[in-house]
Length: 386
Ligand code: GLY
Image (tube, rainbow, N blue to C red):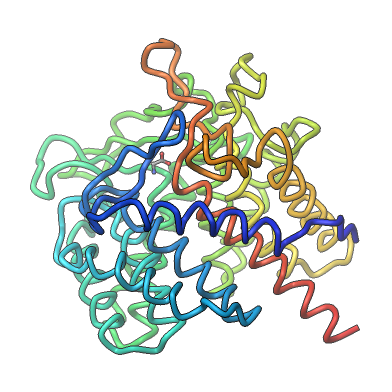
């Protein structure tokens, strides 16, 4: 297996410098960083879907600070807590499906790393709020739109990432129903989101009264039958996570099939274009955030694979991806660029005036940190058990 020579400490220290700089200069601790073309982050308030990623990145920095015994580790905990508590009101929101991202990345990590009950109660309440967006008739959680909209019922593949909130809550004192809802969503998503070649649709619109699919289309990809690369990685990651917590083989199979589609189309540097069907494939149109997500998922798939061949395949895919992401042209140590990860894509759009590529996005740095921590954990485990 290829262990490359990724300098985890240098990469995380560099990302941490950018995270600390934002905290130092931003006095409003509820102005969450979102995207940036240059040095200055645009910000969003707590109800936005990306609000949890900055606190989440701070918790990952704290996790690493503890692991390496950084002298300023308690300062990292303080920063992470400060940016987490500003999201507390979101536990009651029922207006979107993104509570998984918002609450697990902030309060979820806070509880995992500190064990403080005040964080856990927020996660449990948020799961109850998210569950209100589930319709038994449809068998899916409604991603977008009003909870009572009787005409449209919109579900996106990204929703796979919000299931963790329900499963975690169910396994940690919340009602068993929450897990049932998550698994019903995952099961119907297998049927509806995947094409025969294992690529994914981005958006479904269903009839709320009958649960029938009315239309499948894209919002951030090139066209309705194309494969938006981040959507594909939400699916790979989502089903790998589900297998980890349920042991259900169908979820592992789904993650692997989606991963095969993705791996077969990757360019040499392991960073996909924003849409796999696009001929805009130069670095400017890539999505390194999708690559960071894929690396996180491939570390998981490597752990679960039963044969050495598969273990090696996913380990190498994860490590090659990560190696690319921590060096030029993808990694920026410069204060002229807001995020560490360059060449992230918000969306593909055939009309260039609506397209946002070659940008900073806070969630790319969040998943890059997650992948670096996963790599570091795996290496330490290997060294401990030669
Ligand atoms: N969940 C929205 C996105 O991936 O851009």
